Image (cartoon, rainbow, N blue to C red; front, side, top):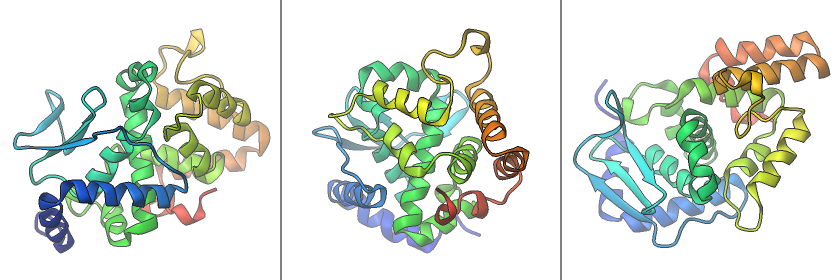
Length: 251
């Protein structure tokens, strides 16, 4: 099967020698794919590292973003276009641009990473069909989907309840919009309790993934009935990735 598809090598070699140019090109691609302006930090740096990047003693990742130094780190030979887009999305997200939300990212990093990866898939689907196909096929580690549990959750949500456009508004930084106001509008629009900042007291020990899923099931059951709940759960747990992450069929 090999380490990576052929397209990886041509992109990697080009990007390796043109990091700033590729960064700027991909930022424009992100804007066009998401349909809104993005605001990367000034002097956004790209740094290549020759040692594995560790999220924890046992978790090695292909890239990372430091909001304090405004630096994207890419691990030698293990990153591709997907990784670059993922880290650029971090750089333009509320969770990396608003200091008050840094704690949310640290506390609920799988939620933030999952939403970042879900939107990465949307960009790939919109602009790079070959990358998208390799992303969901998982044939090559360097191209494969990350944080799959949460990505599936967001895919199911976008099929059944929440349009992608509203997930984008919750994620992509806009200096003219207060995120906390946007978050409250989001909760009210979909009849959800606060699952991210101030969880209900009796539910604070419930993992965010489970808490959000339970809230969504409750809303679907009350608004559209048990059949839609079953459709949501099938997408969440059983449907093939090319079904749950078919962005053309999402709201």
